[in-house]
Structures are given as C-alpha cells and as structure tokens.
Image (cartoon, rainbow, N blue to C red; front, top):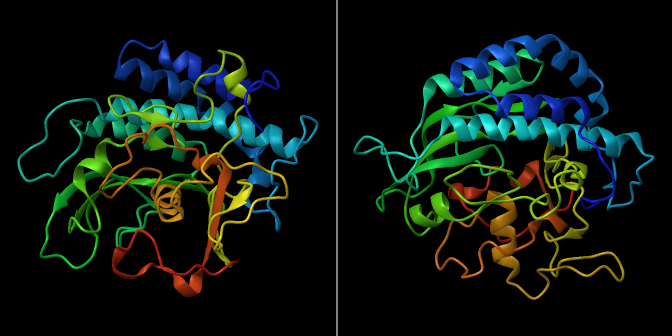
Length: 313
C-alpha cells in the first residue's frame, strides 16, 4: 500500500508532532517521560506484528484490515525513533581515528533519550556486537583498513531494538573494513533507504513526496528474524533473492532493468556500500523487493554484502 489512501498514524503521530515542537534536548526528554505509560499501553495493541505471517501480504491488505492499521501505527512510532536518532547524530566533526562519518558526530546524551524512551515502552534492545551484520547494523562510521579480510564491529554506538521477531531499528555501529567490501564515502553519504529522516544525511522513504496527511498512511517496513532465517522487507512484492527475481504476474517492478546484485546490496544494507555509486542513487525503489536468507547461510561469509547464492525460506 502506498500513501494517500487514508488519514492514519493515530496516537504515535500525535506524539511525533508534540516531540518535534520541543525546543531542546531537555524538553524532549521531559515530554517523552510524560508519554511513557500511554505509549507502552498503545504498543501492546500492535502485538500481532511481533510474529511474521507465514506468507507475505504482497500488498493485498485493504484499509479494513487490522494488520495494515497496526503497520501504519508502527510506522508513526518509527518516525519518533528517526527524529530522535537525527537529533543524536547532528552535523559536526569527530576525533581523529574515529572513521568517516559523512560529516556527522554522536551526541551520547541524546542517544540515551532515544534508547530510554523506546526501551521504556516495551521494545527490547540488542547490540549484536560480536560480528557485523547488515541486517542488525546501521553503519555510522567506517575505518578503512585494507589489511582487514572482513568487516568487523569496532564499537556499538547505540543499540538496535526488537519488537518480538520484528526488527524495529538497527544498532548504530562504527566498523573497520577493507575498501573492496565497504567504501567509506558510499556507506556514509549515499541515501539511507527505509528511513524518514537523518539530516544531514539524505534519506528515502515511501512517504516522501506525499501530502502532510497522506504520508501518514505509509506502512512500516517489516524485517524479521526467526527460526526460519532473516527476512528483508517481508511485505515486498518481488523476491529479489531468486535468480531471476520473481514478481507477481503482471506486477511492474520499478528497478526491473537494474543490476540484481546492486538491488540486493541496497536491500541488505539500506544504502549503497560499494563503488561506483549509482549516479541516480536517490531514485531506486527497494521498497518493492523482498529477500529471505536461511540460517544455514547466515552470517554471510567475510562480512560480505552480497552472498553468491540465496536459499529461500
């Protein structure tokens, strides 16, 4: 479902608007403290999202479906998270040796507000600091090391968050990697997809370009990890893990003529991480694609970005 079909976003939409009106970090923290109890109660109404349905919805939900309404409300909560992360990673310089960040720095106090509120309402934090995983990690900084043979996590800057098996947000990390696996400039400055805001970094989100009300009917992008494996964008209509990618009969895919390897790279990492970076890197449409990787091939070898084969779950 695309934006424009209705006016949704309910309670968490109202919290988002109240939050962005706060003039500073202290006021934001106090505002969120006052919302902890009602937000926790409201999150319990979204419980069915914690577990993946056995078959993808493939866009077949209608406005009468409760699961779609839950997904729309979860999207509104994700905007609160995005706003708090943006406030926690403003433009600025980092200390020498920290790595390439695309011109952003970290504000630990603001990050504590982000994690404290979302954990306080019932989401479960994680770090996954033992190994780099594009499913679990949003790369904030890259230390280029061509003597390295794999991508490794140097530091977890903020935890990710689970809602049952549903990945609500990824952990922010500083990584060390050889440039043939991770290009620092591409990874920290190419548009971050499935993300509403991260200024000064560019982002791309299905709500962008829609009206102030219509954009709130965007559904949350569901990435799941469960006993069957890892499921990227479970509601996507085109299985790009297959060779060739499989779309429902008659369903046009906006990226159908583009490199399948680059489409997988983008869906796995939610941004481009290798050079050459596409000239039109802000005009791709990974929101239509989905991919599942079984536990038998995870973690991907050597921190790789695109595994040569994919096992359907």
